Image (cartoon, rainbow, N blue to C red; front, side, top):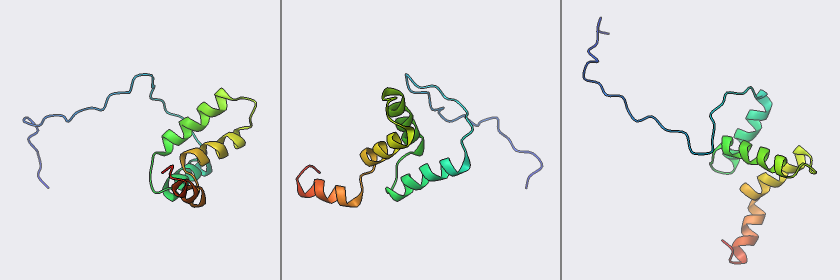
Length: 95
């Protein structure tokens, strides 16, 4: 390892901007909750757990009559349908 490095010609890479209508925050989420969302994304073959959390919160806010658990279940079914549901949709030609 060198004692000193020359950074005089280094350029900073692009900084990703915040999407309009979004605010970056830091929150504390219980480990088991975060693990659950990440597991759902992994089992679905990819995606973004933050987007899934946002969708679940939005659904809950827009439909307060429903419990948070019911909202999460419904959102997960919509975002990541079960293999059986996907097969039925594919067979019906709905892709």
